[in-house]
Image (cartoon, rainbow, N blue to C red; front, top):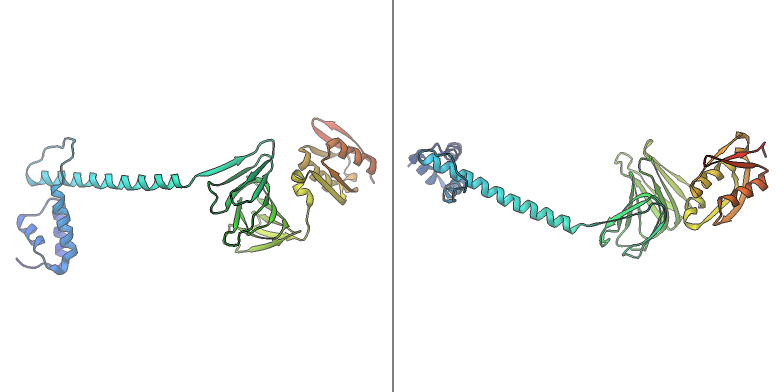
Length: 314
């Protein structure tokens, strides 16, 4: 029997798979040049598939060898499908079982979360913290605002994903705030050093923020700004303390809105720049308003849950 080249042998293999070869052509495939052994191996694979049992469901009756080849091809396809399904579902079911997530949510109250590495997270109301069970990777996802007291581990950085920004530390204390839908992520560092970066590869910027500094990532402008200005009232919800040092009344009321959860408004804009200094420990709304009334000579009244401040100026 003559030898055939690689191209001819591939064509014969295709004919064989489709059940179109003669007996002489099949012998030619079997006795082909050993240099074409990959094609011979394929031939032997297809030939072995003839021994596969036919499927259990009825097939349309065809005459001769083509009927048998058709049944063998169907059986082989089913066998491969079963094998693929087993591998796929077995692999992904094990993968799903291996990764379990823990999600802690708050609504009207704060919650202290003690992680397995020794780190402590204080989650403010209306927040969510998500991390993998076991916490081996020291990675969390935050929605809302939280204060982190991170246990130091030189070999394993602690990462927080908030919106489109990442905060990475080895062991520090810091505050983070990101509200779903907001374009800004706010960071304030109480102790140590923090690496703050954007998920946007085009920014390619990593800002290091140290104790007593703040940083803000703005998604709209795709920028990170760092400030050498520490605002203790960002974590007043945790410390239960409001601190003001020659603060404009407008800024004071912004902090008070976040702390008390009420809305303020000025009857006359002229008093918005009046300045106030003072510290309040675990204050009530009435205590703060009475202090402003006495020091700044203003009055106030409640209207539909909103506090209206009145005065002629300072």
